[in-house]
Length: 93
Image (cartoon, rainbow, N blue to C red; front, top):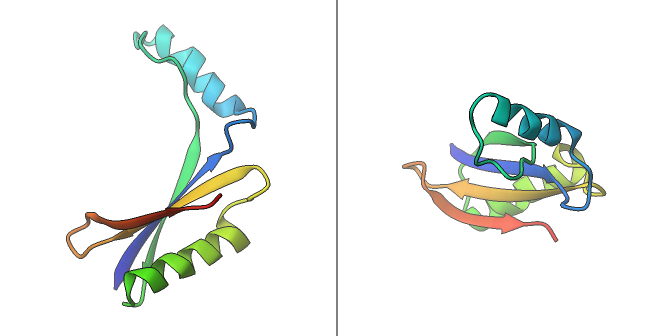
């Protein structure tokens, strides 16, 4: 089995009310150095073994069709090696 990560974030021009709420709360908790917060989501997928290019293409297709709303969100696909280190990443444009 191969592991693939898909990180989904709102596009920079899209308002992020959840991130803003966290940003306002952090200074009240003593974390004064935070200047910006953007909230996102991560999907960890286990796929049948295949070459990294196929894994990346498959996960990107999943993200485009289901995992991300590409009108307002960007995504990044990371294929992990057997040891868990990133083998390769791909971002949507």
